Image 1 (tube, rainbow, N blue to C red):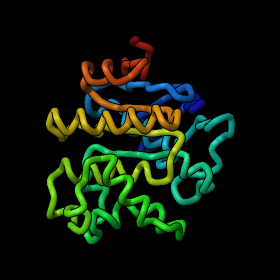
Image 2 (image 1 turned 90 degrees about the horizontal axis):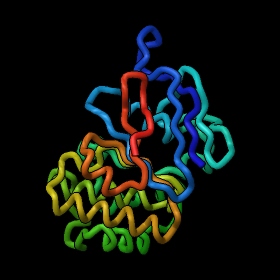
Image 3 (image 1 turned 135 degrees about the horizontal axis):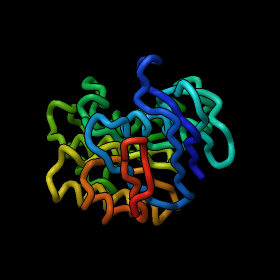
Image 4 (image 1 turned 45 degrees about the vertical axis):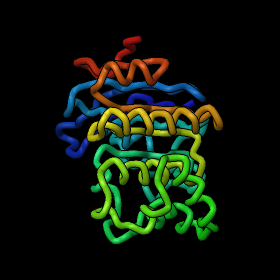
Length: 220
């Protein structure tokens, strides 16, 4: 179970973006978080993935409270999450080839990466001819495929997709959602999918939570 309990968070303590928000994702479940831009859902997603420390409240991962944030989180908790953001060009080092981008989590742990990179590139639909290119040499869709592959590299138990498909065309959207769902079928990973496209989230997720005036509330 991924639990966000009474979370208050933001970027200015005097005006938090989130106040006393609670959200849970069951093991193996796909939960959609639906709301307009600027409502705070991306901040909540970052808190869930241990990338942003809340002012108050707790994150509990499979029964264990989070013990740190970002690089200070224990490796076992950090690597429980795979995260894909809305804008791949802001989350990809422009100096890296796509192969090196996918391999980043493995290189950080000094793990063998060649076979895993090839496996993931095939899974997300990246041909070998693209792996040597840098971000400025590929399309947004191709770069987002590489970012999704990077998120799956360490076989996370929880996936956080924050507007992952917002900048993509319909065919690329369908392809990436298909990759996520295939991974979930194989591993039983849970999913929190953040977005503002109701049709997509309701088709993709078993449960959709809509952001109301006081934060998220069960919608379906």
